[in-house]
Length: 287
Image: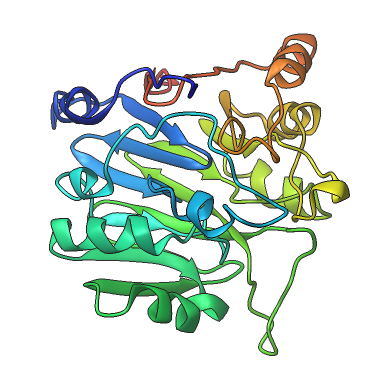
């Protein structure tokens, strides 16, 4: 039996829509795996959504079945009603999913997709004629429009892989709006230079994987719960939220290690259920 989401479909969409356009707080919803919807002052940003069963179907008759743990919280076309800015941190399908992005883009009338430069061609193959504007990023690249400012940070999955031009295949994202800074790591291990690249950003929220790095799973690894807690503490995050667990039976971990490590370090944290909203107030004025 699937674990139930906190809220789904129409109820979740209503919860997103009810946040007023003049609400100065930061609102986040965990959508499962590494997917998060962020909303602030009327503008939405969707990190790495996986809102289909494409991997369960692909691997159903193999020696690596992707058995789903948690129910899907929303159909992707519903999110197309509220979001235009979307990320895909790397090529793996749970982060760049045609079965999610194609209907989402169609419902939105077009999306702006932020992704690593080296994977743009593969993304175009997967997404075909979907109305997508591709914004390629690599280490240090920045992008800004009237809603969001986005900067790329290298990710190690399991290493920092670069193309012949030195551009990263796997990235995380620093997103800023109205004084808030969010870091979504994508899939990554703790590599040299990661903490140094993040400390100066004074992240309000860090969204970090906790499923760990276990070669016997035959997939690239991630931070475990203790490492995620330590990275957030090292970088001075106001809040850290775990992800990349409770999606597939073969590649998950309990958040207990993460919670105990955060508690030991004095690191503020939240562990939302899929579909649950987390709200963060603006930083107090220094004056």
